Structure formats: C-alpha cells, structure tokens
Length: 263
Image (cartoon, rainbow, N blue to C red; front, side, top):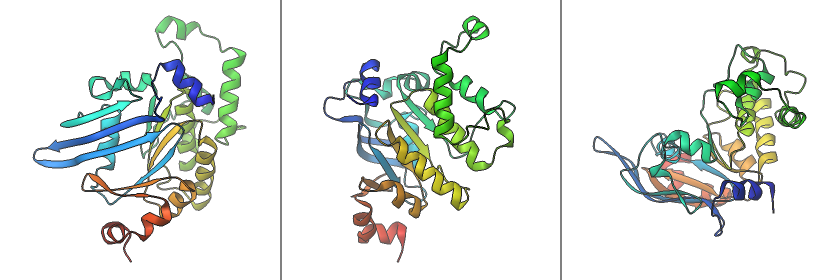
C-alpha cells in the first residue's frame, strides 16, 4: 500500500476501481452559454493528468465543479465512488481531501515561510487549541520535510511577501501539502515564472507524482511535455473532451492542431 493509498483508506474513500475522481456527462450552463457540455473524465489514484485547451474551453469551470464553487446543471461528479461532490459544500470538499491552487499565489505575505506552513497544517482550527498549541516533533518534522521539498529550507524565517513569484507558488504548493490532500488541482502553476523556476516546478511535480493524484491545467506546452512523461493529456474544447492520449498523440491530432496548437 502506497502512502497515498493509506491516506485514501483513512478518509474512507472507495477507490476499488482505481479512480479517485469521476465526472460523468457534466454540463454547466450560464445564462444560455454552455461552459461544460456533457464532460466525462476520470482521474486514477496517484495519476498526474495534464489538461490543456484554448481559452474558454471549460478548464476553470471544470475545476470549479470539482471544488464545489459551481454546481453542475446536469451530470454527476464523484470523489472516489461514494462522495457525491454536487451534494457537498466547498468546505466539505476541501476537508474530504481535494486541494486547489489558483493561478495567482495566495500566501500570507506578512508571515514567515514557516508560519505559512504552520497555519496551513491540518490541525484543530478552533480558537482555544490554536492559541495554546505547541508543535510536536512530528509536526516540526513535517514542516521541515515540506521546506526541503519546495526548496525553501534555509528561508523559513523569511517573510513570504519577500519571496520571488516562483517561490510564492512553491510555498502555496507546500501549504497544500500540509493539508494532506488526496487530489490536488493546479491552475497554470508556471504562469509568470522564469525558465529556471519553471524547470524547478516540473521537478517538484514529478517528485509528487504517485504521492497524490494531481490535475494540472496549463498552457506552457514545454512544461506539459516535461511533466506529462508517459501519462495522459486531455484536451478540452467547447466544454467537452476533444482528444486524449499521450502527449505525442495529442500533438499529432489534426483536431487539436486546428483548434489549439496551430501549425
């Protein structure tokens, strides 16, 4: 049993068929506009899935449905095989083990790197326990582990507001790690990064591969190629799956070339 399998079992998720997320014929209609059009998708336990597609393809709406921000007009969304996401609040979904990182980093800039990770730790957040809590050696060890993973060890006492754009993105990924999610959704994680930061982010996600199920929405094709490896890439267009397969298969698909990649 992998670490991720153990976490899933602890949460009570049923993933006996190997998938942690099922979207079946999800449609979302806003004032007559169909943002998602009978979208069907499943993500396997421990998979790193890349989602690409032109602006307006429905990528953000898809993540909004998964996290409870948007309710589907029709269709079903399941976390494991027992948790109906359409019946859960955003808070309940986050608590169940789905973490989301938006394109713009949202760290606590007036707090140190260490404090950001401490605040994000999966603990009893009621006032009294928080006021009188003292980190155990295991909890400090967890923070040290995450600091090394995101390459911010040695910068733990630095104010988050003084970090570079890329470092803030890594810190937020580290904060997600502190929540011990089973499924992580990342929206354009390398937007605005330098080439060096982008390469480091690819290394980071490859290190997380298999420890969590990860869905990455991204436009940077070089980055997608780096992290997709032999995994599946899904192309969305007009709210539905246009194509799906290995990166080289998707890049050679005439429909994808026409609507997204160009010649």
